Length: 236
Image (cartoon, rainbow, N blue to C red; front, top):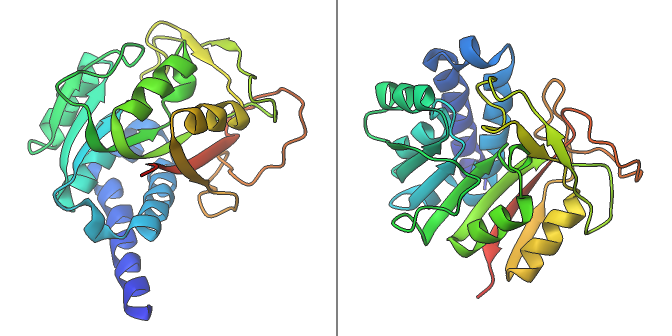
């Protein structure tokens, strides 16, 4: 067990330095690479780094592809789907071994990519206009998934509402229409789609304004940084 923990620690340090060197800090703000490192560390703790070798992985809303690029380094066959052409060009420049495609994630996933082994679904759902249709489509397109998103403060399994975003921002909704789903809304859909899941409830991924250990008070509010993360797997 100690050796395993040391192995995870080594990969975490590599990941942290990887984003620092890659330049993502320059483009997405101070502290971004540290936050990424924590989320990837949570994945490595859960799955182990050997899990990804040989897996077909699709990263949704990949930005500049730094997360997908990291898992490609672990031996995964990675395809990044990204809505903005300028970001796709940057993925291809940084990571020639990673396949990158411009794609509007409001649409069903490309039929030539699904079903796939694993989907990385970080910070995408709340930038989409129809979270239920998108999440159902994603569940049907993979064996396993890590799902992370901002959430509304509600335990209502039917709670979601549209939000307005600035479409000119490089990481906002393409059409300016996002959503504010509750964690209960998301978990209802996961159950209905035959997925087992485990949600992070502690502070291990907290970084800056982003926090995962917040209590539900049913205010219906969705302040920036109020997030949840799940490890999701199709039931046998």
